[in-house]
Length: 195
Image (tube, rainbow, N blue to C red; front, top):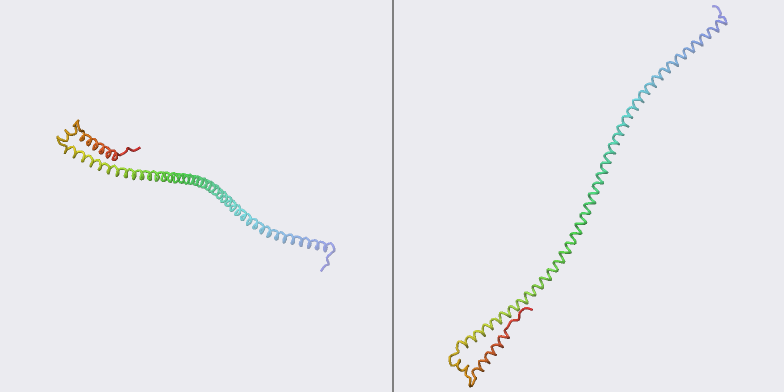
């Protein structure tokens, strides 16, 4: 076997180095290829996750916008309901005030009517007493009239002549006395008119 010459040895060494370098480059390329595939897979996964998150974010934005519209609508409804409640409370307050005024007026009118009823009842009682007195006096007048009629009916011709007797005038005086007595009785039975 021939010994290698230093040039050949140097060339073999150089070739070995080149082969070694090529092998290392090839291993590195394989590692880079594997890492690139892994990175591309990670990138695809991350892109898919990013797209999913974007869709979720868009859905969340739409939900937030929808909730905001609903909140705005509910806020308006609440304000409207509060206005209605305030208006109803104002109406209720006015109604209560009017009711209290009507009750006070009714109480005043009732008291006034009670007083008038009391006065009317007293006047009726007084009129009743006056009417009772009038009935009593009317009965007495009736009796006096019957007595006068009885005396006039029983008056005969001689009584009439004696009454006009110019000499003695006794009967005439008796008739005048009787007339005066009946006039006094009638005056005591006279009912005075309401003043």
